[in-house]
Length: 366
Image (cartoon, rainbow, N blue to C red):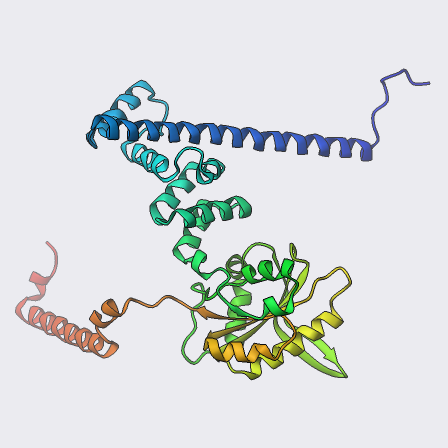
């Protein structure tokens, strides 16, 4: 008979116990990191607030920041957060979020350099709070945050033309509307003017990670050219996704040209087929997104009035074009060809003259 305490737990019991310990340790690490980050940002905010108050009440000039940077660096040589530029960010941080405002409470929940990017690139206070909230909700890295700001996500979010208010319950309509952007930024694709819808679809599948990032959090890719059999005939959906938080399928139909009224009828068929053939009692109604190169808002609104199924229409943008002023100042392809041909002829003539004037011995290095 074994003595008390000499037994070793079974593999299953030990694995479960170890897994729970690991999870608790990770959660504690995350909480500790968040606590350190919040304390650091509150310190930065207070420093910025103190600088603002001294400048406003005692008339200190901008050069005080240079002096502070030197003195703090001398006193705390191991800390790298007191550079001149960082102190300026601290002042801007305090100026952007007055004491007690929701913006200040949210800002301390994201890393410092995320805040710096938001302060630098977003000037509207409400937009700043919006990007902070999105960063917290989606766990954006700094690079992803910058990309979302520079692509104008705030302006594009919820910009599509939809019939969701009429076809979905109020509790689902707003969430579904915010799901769709307009336009979608597909800068990661390179397609020529002669490209077809199949080329667009292939490009999105090949760059599915980029496309999922552009779609937003919660999308899971089901497949391309997904088959649906209705009355013995096979139909294929360009792109099929499932939105996990909203518990619904999302059908995307790609159009290389402008939106046409008949596109909504085709999408209504796809949405109804997915609801009946793929959907379960646990799934909410399928949403259809028609993604086209351009659209007329009035035509879209008229076309969607006749559908009782939730459909949205958005446009997309491929690689960004140069500003018209810059584009007009650049040489055309024909002009470049003339310049290159002239330069080549000049170089060839120079080489001929050189070879004729030099003797074979002079042409060799000594």
